[in-house]
Image (cartoon, rainbow, N blue to C red):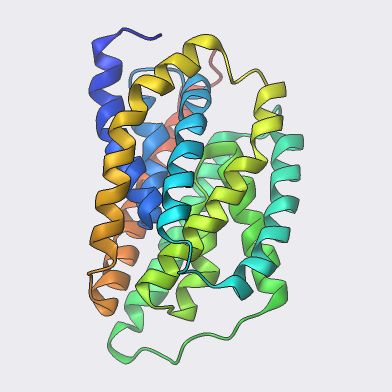
Length: 256
């Protein structure tokens, strides 16, 4: 188990963010790995975080078991399978930094389009099989490589303007599916060491209460304010991802 106090100074706030993200505030989940990476290798962080995701997913799915859009999931989960397969293939060679920059730029574009039309919102967007498969595959791919799958998910689901509980429940089930798809690939990539699993077990008691709090909160927010908050978070996340990607490229290759 990791005993460095500086790691826990970063990991405990990250677990609170993880719990809120699993409750349905999916935008902020992208901050978990970068925050913990301030004190530990990003590669090891990914191995620690996934088991906590899996446990939090169970709690969130039970809480949202009657509140999700099954039609969307029927389209998006097959897309997630494609994205996870591509992520596994690319895991050994893909540039995490380039992916972060691209996702960050797309996040800013989506947020700009939303706020540009904020005063005169168009009617909810129409569902599309092609778009659903494409964006869910992108979400699953970026989630596999960087645990940053929220932006592509919201690019498709956000314009549909679902009621907040339906949006949250659908996000919970979609990302739970993508996380469970990672188990076998991550195992073969050597992510589940004894040290990582023991450290994850220590952090779970922080993440679970935060998940329940997020579920309580999201059921009580106003729809307009909910989407304003989501797209505001996307702006911060977009800039953060770009900064992380550029900083990583400038730093050059590192030794694991």
